[in-house]
Image (cartoon, helix red, strand yellow):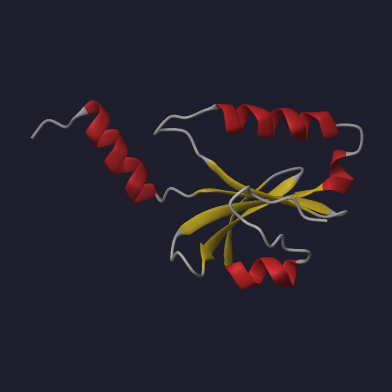
Length: 117
């Protein structure tokens, strides 16, 4: 069964259900346990990043995943990615997070440190 945010009353039960809410795009990163893909929320027109974590690669390290979720949820800072939603099945856990393009990161940096002209 999928876990979901408190705002969502209809929890998705499959990737097809997730794709009703999110259009999943290109891969923007990958690692030992997960792949990160661009996604677009169909009803709000917002862009996000979806981290898809393969549970089979986390055998014996499940507490690491729970700790990471708790840490990310506890943080609130404009320069740290925000966790929007978490979905879970038997095979994977999907995190929907804020998504920053290179241009947005550059703009935040310019605003923070300033720029000599």
